[in-house]
Image (cartoon, rainbow over all chains, first blue to last red; front, side, top):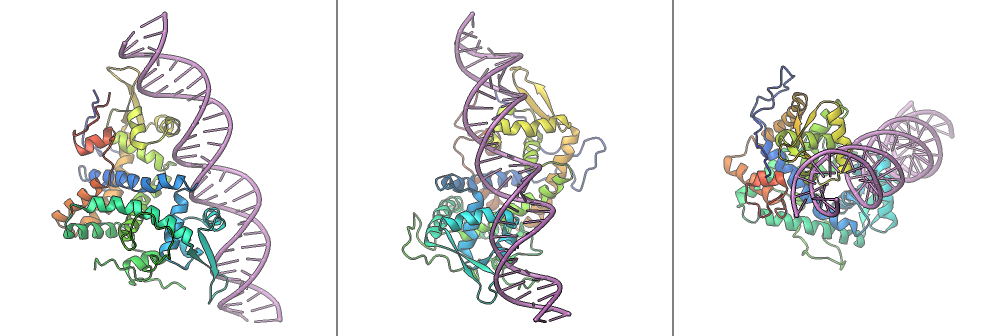
Length: 182
Length: 182
DNA sequence: AAGATATGTCAACATGACTGACATAAATTT
DNA sequence: AAATTTATGTCAGTCATGTTGACATATCTT
């Protein structure tokens, strides 16, 4: 028999004088912590499975997604959003360029910039993956009323760091940015 | 202020006759897709930063978390939950055992099993990380009423695949499992 | 006694991060 | 005009964490 003692999280701080950081015992949100873990795992799992057929990984998906959604994104912006190094982005981006999922255009004002755009081929890939994820989201929201959906949106927004927002986050949260880029 | 209008990303759906796979244009939940991405990124970022001080990574955190939360978890259960191979788990688990964050006990009924338990040292680590994440969650839920919080919980649960649940998911969702293990 | 199961381990490899160094072209400053 | 800074690209090496495949050991089941 599988005996999982659900010995609740109320413990946690009774370790001999260990440096109990901030929270008092019993105040952890184990429920949300674990739901987020599993929900995100299955959420990205949809796309992961499909990506194998293209020989791509999660990294490719993230790049394609943001390039498609924010046409003309600069390489530097993409680095901000994804929070990776240019070397790391370089490999993935090169593949997507070589295989015709993304094209670069030289910036008008600043000709050093390489503005990124999804090709029709790239758009099709993003749409396919977003379709899978949208299906899951739609299913999950099916029995939730509009107030509930609003609460979900508020919650997710409030989970995001708002200090030093990148270009995409500025777009998502509106122009209330304190850091004028460019 | 919950209006999700992407001031600058509103383009993106005007792909000319490209092979639009399944969904009709304009029916994607870009809002939720992106909010989940950023929310989860910052959510795990809290722990990531702290883990560096211990010389550990995300993998260690996941193992510690579930061992602490479900004391006596078997190695096989952990593999189910994390969905990784035993070789991959092996390296991380060995470190946590060697450094005294986890101990193994031989199963009572089945002496082949190695039941896993967090030591006080391990508990302190999990509590520290869960404290950070709980702080973020609590902040995010602060201005949301009980009905909204219920909707958030419902939504996250509905995002999770319920077919073939592992031991931990059975615990989270109650005993309504259709697949008696062992 | 034979076979299945739970766990551990060795070896090789892939992906996607990282750091550091350096190159080029174009914009900006002096 | 020359010097500097910026945006991007690239080479080389490393690390963390995932993978497959093969095999060993102890223990339970048949």
